[in-house]
Length: 490
Image (cartoon, rainbow, N blue to C red; front, side):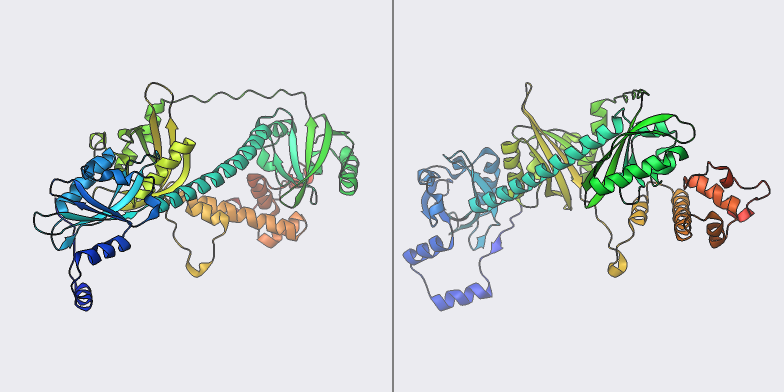
């Protein structure tokens, strides 16, 4: 094993030795005790012959019982190779690199200590300096518990929103959500789209009264006027447009995110069609194909199985190279990170969005986000971990954020061909220009066509393509000789 010891002599230490002069044994012992949380004197057989504790935090940890025992017997099983490495690397005039080990404690919670060692003379005793990491481990556990509490609150809120969305989409009752100020439809569920006889994208953004027959216009305007004044409105019977029949309309007012909206319920006897249950693929095949690293370990955190994505993270070729190895061999830039993750997992049974690092076999360090769960049921308890590489987002030049639609398109680079991206960008720009022209001209389509440099027939073709406006009226169909210019039909 190559020693990574640090030289004990340097110009600064030489100057300090010259200024302090030779110290006697008592003074040197007091200096070591004051500078460290604990110090141990180990003989050539690895037995603890003397111990000094400079911190009251170690009381009750059973440290007094270490005297006369082999040092390696005071630590947990996974820390014994580190003790052996410290004893082997200790040499006169050099200090080994710091290593974290865990001592068995009567309190039931392991005592983490960071050690460095130096041999006092050739084939002589070894002086071991230790730093108590219990406070740091406690702080990391507190931070992890706080993060998990925030994640649980967020999941509860997201769960409530998911239940609302699920009920809204799967409900058999046709429902429209309408902006109370503009009367434009903001959301529509599939049952309402089937009842009205239009695609949902052609309903969203429309004035809700345009979805009904002209004979019901006055009743609907009275309904919205009553909602604005009193917040309540009586149910009414109305007829849908395009001869879709009569419906019973019930309206309720509510506020969300500082916006007042109206929930319109349309009474319909049309049964909702049952959705076919999607086919299920083999669970094991899906897990092995995941783009995120997936690992299953036993209760001692030794790897039982791992998917190819995890092997890519740790820069290894086969699953046999990781099977049986402790997960903390690769997880965490500092050993205390993995300890904090495992402690939180043992206390709560699951962990989400835990930030950490993966150390590759060839020295790479990659930031990951860990989710873990403890499966205690069944014959063999095990732990499951997913490791997702944290995405690196390129900064936008000039410090200005891109529009959200453009940002969404750039995120598709590499997954969608450039030809499709250009076509979708062109469609988006055309739709935005047409909507802006109609808004400026107050829905005067002849003026909007002239503003855009299109013929009326070309404008109608594009509006029909993008589902803009209501093109079912005869005056919107255009005259037979009102044909679009060739450049309008692209």
